[in-house]
Length: 205
Image (tube, rainbow, N blue to C red; front, side):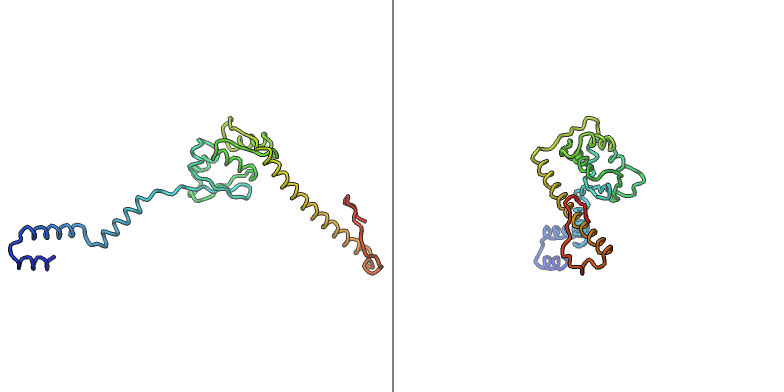
């Protein structure tokens, strides 16, 4: 700016132009270095960033669940909202531990999210009512049963798992019977016997 002032002065009386140069110089002096201005701009953007939603981690029966804190608080006073405000809880990131049933707890979270609970036919309404009372949910919680087709799919998966488990138990029992027979008859494998018959009802020789 000083160099510009010098050149302007050499070319005659340009008072108005010199005044504008002085004004620009004063503005830059008030604003400070460009680096400081950029840093101030970035910090203001960071400070005005929208806050991230707080996620609550809940441990029930050894399994962890996550839900937004606002979702819990929006349902009024319940056991979980009381645990959120527990003064012994050090920080919001600390998990909440509940001694409950992890299988039924997922249906409790459904109430927080959707305002009602939908259960399969494998769970009784009385069980869920008991869970609702434990978590201090309102007495008028709506509990529905899922569609019959979904229940059939769940039953099919359960039957398949049970069948597989039963087969594994039968193989284990057969191996145990074979080992017991070998211990009772050390010459079992050398006496010419080539097979061991296993009864379907679970009884073995």
